[in-house]
Image 1 (cartoon, rainbow, N blue to C red):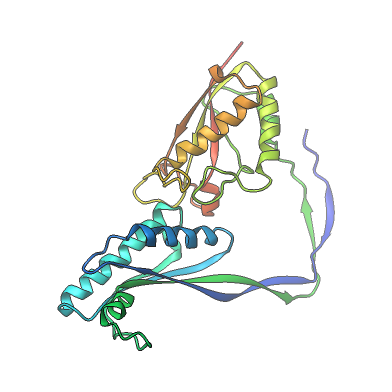
Image 2: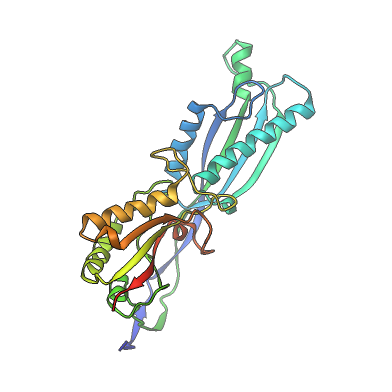
Length: 285
């Protein structure tokens, strides 16, 4: 039986506000093209991988062209370039809600630099500029405040596994989170997963499906696994858990894994959609 214990919690004498820091990246295109060259895509993916460690305020994407071609043509091409970059962000689990601007600016003035080769100068103008605003926490002093909270102990996943289960029950691994774009879990997740595996070994009368999920992709598509370059990240996450459980002694006969793509977003923080769940498919007598 859960016990409710009243206690006094003294809040810290400071709160957290935010300031902003800007990160930029440029992607360059071939003449008359809006398909991202392989070398530029690899540079962009490296930039995106660094964003997983920061709190993003907003992302702006601006497309540009050189001074060759008609104004209407250049405007359309610059817009296509901007949307090509947006698609890469979406395919790599960057939430569309963070992308506040996707604009084609058309032709821009030739850069004033020491370079005298006109062809090279124009190449510097065939680009997309990316501006990422990062939230930086700033302490704000506030007066201490006394609040009363009731402690409600939520059952852990291992406790739920050991408890009363029926076919169709779904257990979400809330503390098992994945790095953006990868089937690799974030630090601390493996310790939690180990306790779940132990409970599953002991509770050998249940069969289940491991369901992998991704965040932020378009039209319920799967995300791209940055390690393999395949568009099967949700399945890769489910298989990673499947392989881990098997290694820890859970019979493969009791398990199957399935990629759910982005069919069932939770509607909260995108990191919670980079998740794995198990659905009970059979409970023995």
